[in-house]
Length: 437
Ligand code: FCX
Image (cartoon, rainbow, N blue to C red; front, side, top):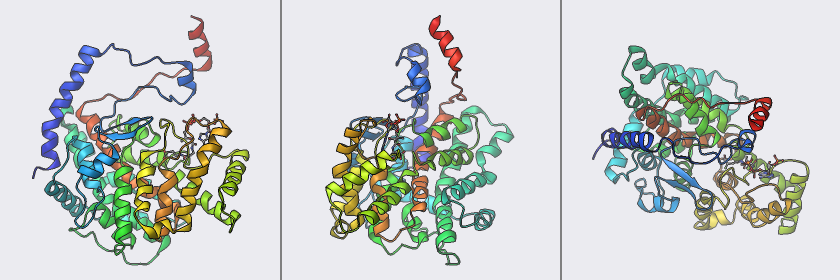
């Protein structure tokens, strides 16, 4: 089997040529107009970023190098004894645009497992944090501090050529991805099971297999499979979302991959973005408590209106780009559909029932451009069922996953020699002056 480096050595020159041609032959082609509404409206819909691994269609949802989630489920290798896509096969696809063989996937799993233990100074740092500090804050701190050993930073200081940046970026990215499960699991242990011994990284397991094992659920095959699927399909969602965009911007300054991804994690930690998965569970539990034995479509509808009338958003619904139910939501729901014990779980049922009512209510409310569920509406209830009930932790799992896409683009941005990002900003007075001209 080839290594991921060897495949990239072949792919990088082709992509570099493609970019060169785009710049020289089509540099002046127009992709759209910049309107005042873009400048004051969060740049929604503005085509202004290069992002290689995935493109999001408003109706069909995400495609990774052209492959839908269903396509990926058919062609990407699973873990031994499993059926779901694993992080390594998704990473391989994102990085190279190619489908790995079973042997290539296993080889990548082993490489990551071999690099998976945390340095002692990181363990000490994380262990010193108060258990009341939000797990996402802790994750970002741990990721940033791992840059102590950044090969990219060391090579930059030595004075390497620009054409070599990507190879060091790749080494850091693989190191970081390898260590994320141990870091995220240590944070979980410290907050929720203090003093409990943590298993070592098992060299024969895949990345998520190890993660679940270190979280303390290694004997739960269904949860392991769920998290494999979860982490694979949360991996990338094109470049404009806040975490991807943030890590891309920070990386463009040539801050190393650790710093760039730590910055992305703090964008993910906002309730309108990744933290929504924590908020969904909190909101659905409140609904369950308030409605008690009276959970009907009508009572859910009333609860939805109560949320909306109090001026809050319905967490897990709406999207900046999507205009249809999120295929990631559908894939997670399908996971439940094949398991009777999940279908009987009250909180899984409540999420499903809410989906039967919420789009019509949100349409009637008339504000959101997309009344359908996004991935965060579904992701937490299955974790809850399997005993991972600490929903403040849920965004950390998202954070382990999103590294796949953000670090892939970090490597590609360096391989393509993309410049520092620096859009032009305007004051309102300056905008008015421009309009009058
Ligand atoms: N409930 C109530 N109102 C909503 C809404 C929702 N779920 N979604 C959007 N709206 C409101 C907006 O707040 C906005 O109101 P305003 O005009 O008073 O400011 C109006 O509808 C138009 O917003 P819209 O253009 O449809 O949405 P945006 O692109 O601005 O924002 C997000 C997209 C995702 C931020 C928005 O739909 C939202 O807040 N959803 C709830 C939080 C959530 O689930 N986030 C996770 C998204 C994602 F999947 C992820 O990043 O993980």
